[in-house]
Image 1 (cartoon, one colour):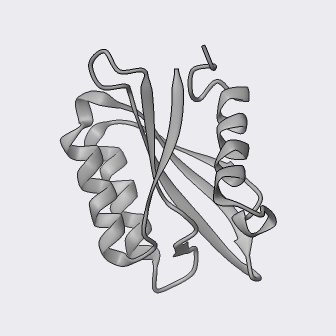
Image 2: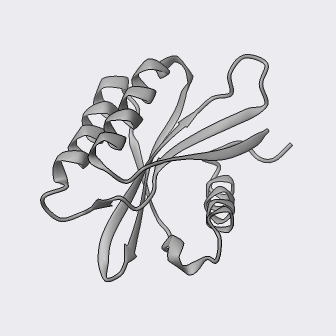
Image 3: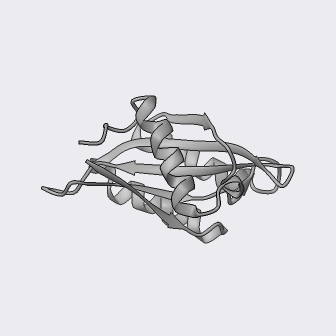
Length: 128
């Protein structure tokens, strides 16, 4: 199985899109994750919606709003949207501490790093 990150933006409307993706695809929902890191001396989180592959497809999408939500006010409302989604779809949010994406020269290297962590912790299926 191939896992691929699909990156949404970092803004307020992007978290709404992420939540709606999970709602409309709740029958495909695999996991909800929150990647925690410190970037530029600020604690930020990246909500992630992991879906199961569509039909006969071999692609598992991981939708992410990368490092767009500061843990401190006023962004708590965005985190609350994700927590409300978790209750609605009855899927717990799994928090994971990771390095910031700024430590990687390319976005693809960062996403490969995250996929490695998720596979190692059996949060997504292994490469086949």
